[in-house]
Length: 464
Image (cartoon, rainbow, N blue to C red; front, side):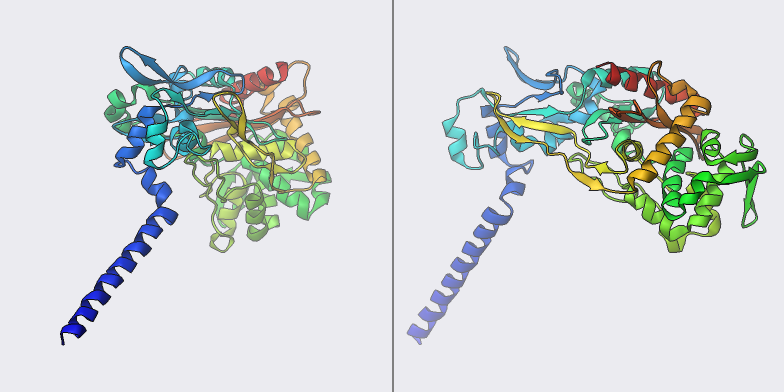
């Protein structure tokens, strides 16, 4: 009996020992990264105190975030404040990390490159003040500043992309916040009615208004190329399932170019119905609408109803950018960039490189094609349609002397006040350097409120 009890106890001890080994292996192999960065992990805080956190730098070597050491101690500073706050994010002992400060925490501490690690050896081998790695962004801080200032006291967002690479040059959200003041201003920011903590450029969801007509055109031209030469007899409205959709600015006989230039609701609602819900939604998905676009920082996915959920009326409304469709400014910049890039969507990217303190490139951004929503032939036709918007239509305010500009305006109805003002476009048409999307919340007409902002961004990129 005694031997039997010893065997049972020994079995329990061995089982407990085995379970402990399995659990510790699980923690080390599968959850080490999560535990390393857990807010309650004192070791990470010690590591941050040992290493001088790396800088966040724009494409022209301007510092957007850095750690300074003075008699007052170690402090994270953000020279551009609220202009780039929604991009850099913040670092706070009290609130933790957000934005690029959170996503690239390992790189900024040098953990990924071997400057540090998750064990106690990292704490002992480095003296205080050892620098981490630097993050080099595709962002241009002065372009960012221009866009932010041009929004004035209005809420909105601006996104600018290099069409051929997907590199993001501008990602403005207004109102913003100063990451250097995040702890003292947190409570007021959190409850502010204008939601300054929301990165409108990638998290704001809006009806696209008439900018969606670019997507509708891409769909119908792919299915029915002859549409490019059609003539439409527009009565100034369209009735769908008993509902009248007004179109007072575009009456009479219209070519497709005139319909785009004058932003005809009749023509594009009709074309959306002709295309059909399934092919329309497929076209939208091809531009990334309704798909997750990973940037590394928190971003929302645009929303579009499933084809089987759309009535003919909703399809007509969605084809002109109303109804239940919601998009981010980033997504509409991608639509413009796709036209500029011959029908190809490049993967959007915000970080160009991770560099060691000595300037050695540890990791770099690789250009990658993400989607192909249309053929090059279709993109060429739509490009010409968008040129007509700027040369003789609703987007004249986006024109740049000496350069051809393509664009599309939009005024998106919303239930909370005046329409949102939109503009998407690119320039120069013959060799596109930049594609832009601008939204001014409750701004009214896109041609007067959003187009001038886009013009200045495009103008500055071209001049460089």
